[in-house]
Image (cartoon, rainbow, N blue to C red; front, side, top):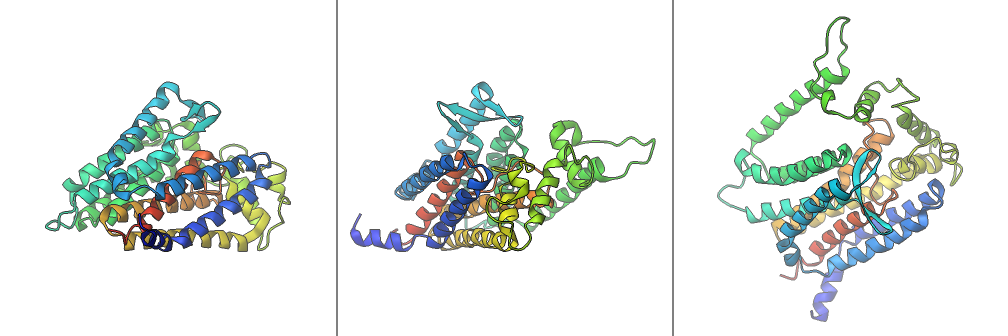
Length: 381
């Protein structure tokens, strides 16, 4: 590649996204020094590996990545199925493959594989004569999303399955669906809300039997998380313990926070899973509301910058991949912060680039590498 082309690629990298992502990652390391003082060094290694993966992905021709979408998708499906044979159970789910000293969570990489596969479908299905997607044309991308989502769901990993669902729906919405599909989706959503209300929230008069359609198929801890969310003052020593302690930590931080390593909920270990699912609660307690706004601003820069990459992409594949990566990060941030503040049920979703975990860190960096690749090559072809 000529020197001029290399310079153009560097200039057109999404520097705002990359700098904001690095800032969030460094904040995460700083936060982990307080939340889990023995783990931040491992997270620093994961960050280094993630940055190396990001750089490596930017060096690969995007056309090769597009042609490899099918084998990448099938490989990730195979790894998910392999969990049933040799997977390690953690937190009630068979989610981990143990490779020597390393533990890998295939579902994190399946999200990337699903985005690449759906982006390839929408790129290959570009028909000017039929610009909008109806029910039949949406069946293939729905199947591409449903298959891995169901495999993750039966691990059982409801949180990750929900994130995959929302990411897939975002990609489908980006494809411009027909109004009839939107209306049908709205009706199904309303019916689903009615079923959930009947199963979990509607008061049942004495002597009347509640007809349950969802609870019968849920694990006990999953049911407890939803009922606890709907009744936040109930069972504070059981199903609502996590949420209660998290809200105490977030609220006690005030505007300026208690100071680094000065958080009582964190230091006294009242806050559960404080290095993973509830890492935002640690940040809120020790650094306060204003620092939380700063963190949200950095995530906003990542989101807006990712959508900017999609807008400027030279083809549909790049645009859909960029939207998929943006959706993947957005929904995970939305659910995690909603969860720790009590606005959403507890689902065990980590906060991207902040929570401890190698698979999460590397998969997000892989997605950011794809964004950089799309942005840097938009003027070369």
